[in-house]
Amino acid sequence: MRQKVVLITGANGEIGHGLIHHLANNTDANIVALDVNPLDKSLRDLCKTYIVGDILDQMLLGRLVVEHEISTIYHLASILSTKAEYNPETAHRINVEGTMNLLRLAVEQSQWQGNPVKFIYPSSIAAYGLPDLKQKSEVGAVKEWEWNYPTTMYGCNKLYCEHLGRYYSSYYRQLSADFGGTETVDFRALRFPGLISAETTPTGGTSDFGPEMLHAAAKGEEYKCFVRPETTIPFMVMPDAIKALIDLEKVDKSRLTQLVYNVTSFSVSAQDIFNIVLEAFPDAKIRFAVDDCRQRIVDTWPESVDDSAACEDWDWQPDYNCERSFHEYLIPAIQKRYQ
Ligand code: SER
Image (tube, rainbow, N blue to C red; front, side):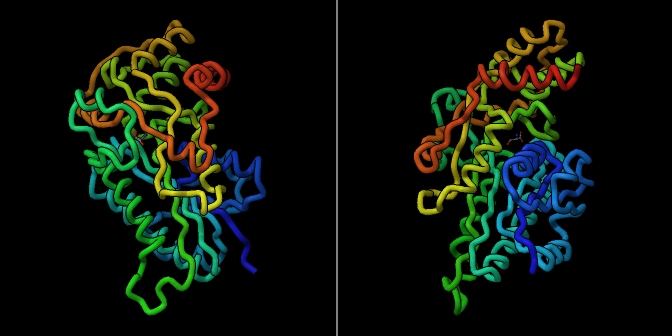
């Protein structure tokens, strides 16, 4: 008998770290971790197995299915927004084709098992694109279906993959004779704001100025914040991001009225983060040195998102507001980490 497992792609990333710790400590899930780089040593004992490989490698995915019965996929692997702009076509392959490979795998698994495989997909505020700063300051909290005009390859990829998720869950091979006979993939997506973790720093994102400011200050390193002080976007700390993933995974499907949900905790400006960081680390060597290209990207992201659908449908509620995020989680944990 093949063992039931939870597959996590991009396991080495920021969300992967948090999620693996959570699942290993709080559930009896058998975790199969997949990443292009060897899994972080601290995570290895927490997983049933880890695989070094590429989500574009069809053979590798095929072998996964031979060996495991996958009940849930957390598809975290992705090239983030800044990095993706350096090689948009490669990013497209990884972000879109990689996701399609996993969606196909999920459909096949669902058909074999006669049960839907859950496919949990972190999307992003990068799926939004506001045309100018005037609109950004006037529109307020955006709803899932508003302003879906991303300006980055990453944002386009995320938005399109949300649609692919809908296609694979409801319309895949809709002209085939046996269409509609079996349950297929149960796709659920979250649009995350900028994420901040005390344990890891992101690589290649454009919301990275938040976490980078904090980690650099704690390490006593100089940091040049690449956006203007008044730049405001929503943020969330990693424990809340993990909570959102877990809560969305476990809610009964009958309660879900949509496939894609905004989630958020607090919206702050770069200046707000600067002030909080400086109060905690008075010797911090941070200055603002705007990178026009990255600024342009953040300027298209909303100041806040409306997560009322998530609150209503699956009782979403962040545990950490801004005050708690910094003073009860980030600052104490980061101080300890770099002591
Ligand atoms: N944190 C991501 C990025 O900056 C947005 O989802 O690319």
